Length: 448
Image (cartoon, rainbow, N blue to C red; front, side, top):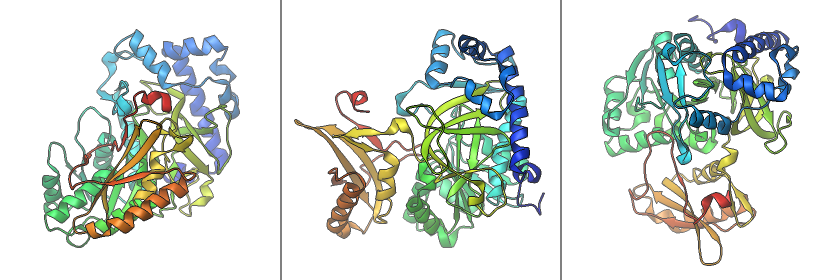
């Protein structure tokens, strides 16, 4: 293993034809398991006349109805606490987790059995090993270790690899920086936002992470910013380390995609453990390579809660595996997860996506933190970008504000963005997923 570039060499380099045969076999097994053991799936499939026996090719997956978060939540509301999706009794679980509850939504509650949890760590091993984590590494995990699943799987994957794991729960940012330095951490795992915050805190402490720390790898997850070039560039310069993006979901329990050490500008799909479809979010029909669409995931590894054809609302662009030179045969998502379709805001007839705004804002090195603030004036909707500058960069504001206003308008059909300078420390900081969008319109949901 130590001499291999792959955690699972056989599967990660498997010819596409063999990979598809493996997917079909796993799909049949999962569908049969779900039909027999999960009332949620059986009732939905019976209602539309679908049966697992009809899965004779991968194309037959399209006969299966989509699974949605709304259906899952309705099941939980009708049958608390877990609905009728679990395929075995709750008494068989060893883990309990919640979604992060973003956008004020009710969290999804999930359970895992022992076999599920082994698989969850295994998926993280694929991604960590691909980005260069090895037994000799010291991995600091800047994570709160609560019920949000977050980096739990990464923690156990690092142990499985044999690396020294330093859990960073219940610590201030200052204490975390100190421990990264004291323990000689070589790898730090966090959200992109919190990696920036750690660097800011280190600078306030007189520490130059790029020169003074041993960190050479940042493992990012939890936000689309991990694949935004401007964000990665800032982080790599600040830390003197390579940044690798990953993405996971509480609904499947672990990561589905990861960036390898070739940093191809996208993330590899772990196709021997998932079937990932990309569809037109309006029609539900598949879209081809290079087209923006919505991720639909079928996960083979978690038997406790079978997830088949789950509509994620994630925005992705799928590209062939040959896009990367690493030799893996799983396809990639160019630019990782590009945001969420349900994050889009309509401002005076123009679609505004938070990731697109962040990609522009982060091009300006003088900006320390920002917030997207949407509000309604007497006559129309308005959008303001609230900005904090880094200490000592205040003199750049007149030119920066003019350039930023122009760049935002050019990228959004000449929509006029207001740009406001904030006092240092006025905007919130985040440890987990950043929530930089504030929609203060009277009926915000109407404008989505």
